[in-house]
Amino acid sequence: MSDQPTIKAMSFGAGVQSITEALLIAEGKLEKPHAAIFSDTGWEPAGVYATLDRVEREIFQPLGIPLYRVSNGVIQDDILNPDKMRAIPAYTASQPYEVKVVDRWGLCPVKSCGWRKLRQVKADSAEGAGEMSLFAVETADLSDMDGLFDLIHLIPLGATLSEVDARAAQWAPPSDIEIEEGDLEDEYVAASKVAAALRRAGLRQVPGPHDPCNSTGLVATASHTETKRDYGMLNRKCTQQYKLRPILEQVRLLLGAPIGNEILCRYCNGEGKRVAPWRAKRGETVIGDCSVCEGLGTISRVGPPPAGAWAEQWIGFSTDEIGRVSNRGDTKYSRSRYPLLELDMSRAQCIEYLEARGWGNVTKSSCLGCPFKSNAEWRRLRDTDPQAWAEVVAFDKAYRHGAGMTQQRYLHASCLPLDEAPIDVRQPREWKPTTVTDQVYAAQLQRAEDGDPDGCSPWACRSGRPVDDAA
Image (cartoon, rainbow, N blue to C red; front, top):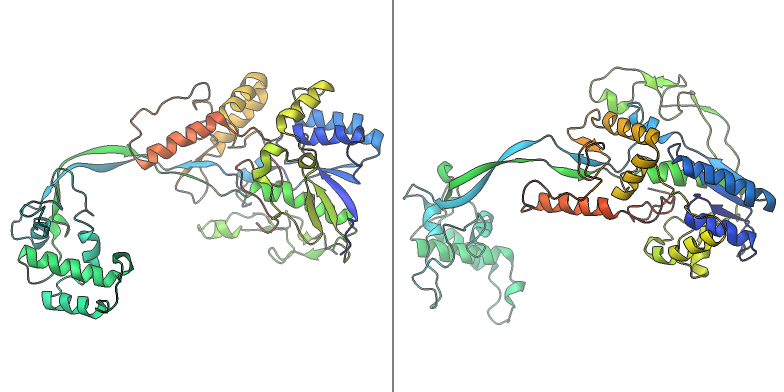
């Protein structure tokens, strides 16, 4: 491969950084690339398309730089199409359900219960002699007692004391070698502690199953019920499918790659119609367009470029986005370059640069329904573009239930319908964030308010994770 690129291609998102690069080219501060490529998801804000037209008209055309507008489909339509497996990183929540929360534990009421007796063993140290230092009924959980009830499950239930001693002897470390406590085998630690506890409790064997206390020695003496939901997030696939893939296909074409001959789609036998396999698994028999050939019945792919040909791919990351820089998106025919990093320009400097040249108030590039939008962005969309807001609200409702999914999907981190989500103020949760689930929810709300200052890049999703061509 030659050290010099065959072509220089600019990934153009019509946002702050990419427009800055275009103006720097016009002023001669950056050399002229062979092409600029805009990957259109079909769901960008109207301001992005208007800016794209202006840049092409006022900058690219006078410079003789062709702007290629590429696409891999209309993302919002594909997402709602049950015959296509398309997804965005939406927030998910289960249906509300009730769980029993124990407020206080007590000893098993069956006094002969061996598990209860283990809970009552006395400490074997001089300082704690005669005290229940390993267990306090009012605050106990099921894994206290210095880990005894975690370790005891490594020993077969019903094992005799002599069998437990034999296990300890089998795993005992050599007496002539000094070993740190943390280096001891789990089996030795378990057998030793269980044997000691059995002796202190006056038991001759590990207790057997005991239903009243579920073989724990404890029963709930006070409890209440809480309504819960399980929260999560779907995997991110949209950036690779709708941004990166069409750009790289166009790069290959610019490098001279051939378009393969049309062949019959083997997934639908050339008919263009089939029952999608994920629908068939659910017992559905609805026939729709084949998702592989897009209903055409034939497939034609862009092949690899000629040997040795490669493109220098311009990516508009500024200095404050250094964490998004990665060579994972590089391929055999494409290498990344970051012109703004070479010029040591931050996003703030790009904004000042644009404003000074009459390009202020650039619309951020990201899908209208991107779940990574901040509350400020949602408010701006609602207050400045009522039609787009209504479309996104309708999409959010239509997207709620997915075939074969037990959880519901939401665009906002609160897991509330978008037109009900707390986008105007950061609202505290209606109950105290005492559980891990609540804390995750609170963190999601904080992220929803702060958002990501950067737009959506084909080379790094707004979630901050790098994307590669093999994703």
